[in-house]
Image 1 (cartoon, rainbow, N blue to C red):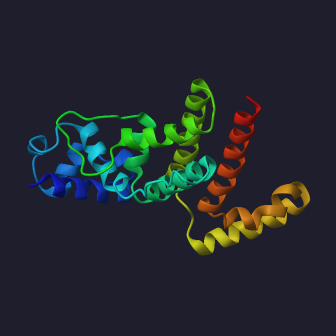
Image 2 (image 1 turned 120 degrees about the vertical axis):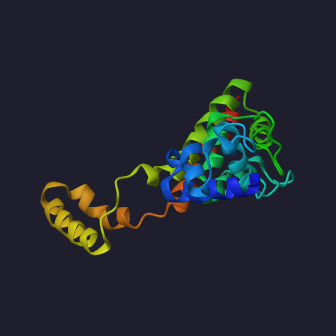
Length: 214
């Protein structure tokens, strides 16, 4: 048994059941060992999440300091979104601001370094320290919502059933819910990455105007 094997198994479990389904007991069952044996390699679940997050944090591209702060911020947050879609543990660690874990060494960029990168960009914007904190918390929550939102949704219906339901609702909505009927097709084919980019453009643009007004 190795730490690497434990982390890989935890990542697989998270993809199957979501982060809520990752526990030391379930992980031990997946690996065919006693739960207590895992603690020789990973001290606790918090440390496990940090190690899981490390797999994606290490892949984030460095920001180019020569580009405008708005582009740096938007690009980094989009990278965090895409990495988080592959590994929700990374988002969990950033949202919880898990800045360290006892007896755990990470191989690449740590959560605190990513948080520092975001705050450094916000500092370059000219926002006040308090506004930087508000912006950081809001932006991370925004990205978190786009990553974790689908996992919180109800189990989707089979494709054919979903189409039938959409047609039934569309027919009823034409008379009683005209606004919904007008966008129903687009709601069912929404692109989370495109929606996030739209949201970031609005939010970061508003931050830029706020900073310029100070």
